[in-house]
Amino acid sequence: MKKFFVLFVSMIVFTACSDDDDSGVEGENDIVGRWYLAEVNNSGSLDYEVNDCTSQSYIDFMANNTADSMFYSEVEGECVASEDSGTWEKASGDSRYTFLLPFAEELGPLTGEVRFNEEMDRFTFYPDFFTSLGTNIVFEKPRPL
Image (tube, rainbow, N blue to C red; front, side, top):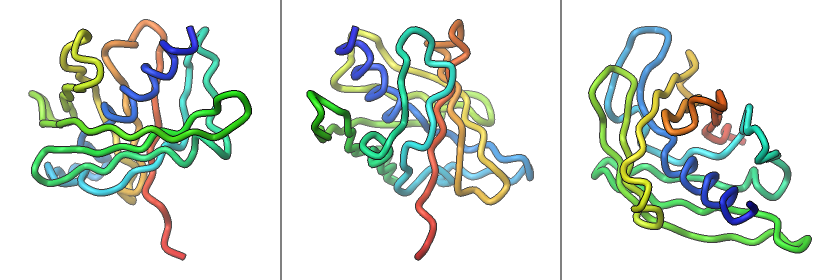
C-alpha cells in the first residue's frame, strides 16, 4: 500500500498541470515554472499528509512540454528524495492537461482539470483517475523573499 501511495503522489506531482483561472485569461504557458506540493485533499485510505518533508516536493514544467520533478517522502523516519522526468501537453478543453509518466506507463496518460487562483501562484489539480475519491492536489509557486 505504501508503494502504491508513493507512486500515486509521484504521479500527481507529474500530473498536476493546466491553465484555467477565474479571470478568464487563458494561456498554455501558465503552468510553466516550478510548483511545490502544498496540499493533498481527500486522499481516502491513502491517508497522505503534506508535512515538512513532503512539502519540499516540486515539479518543473518547461515550455518544451517536458517536466522534471523531485519527490520527497519519509522512509523510516528519514526525508528521502527521488527525481523523475516526464512530458506534459494541453488536452482538449480549456483547463485540461494530459501527462504521460515514464515511470508509470502501465497507467497510460493521465488527464485532469486544473484551476488556478486569481493571482496565478496556486493551482488545484483534479485528476480524472481518482475522481471516485474526490482527490485534489494543490501546488503553489514559492513567494519571493
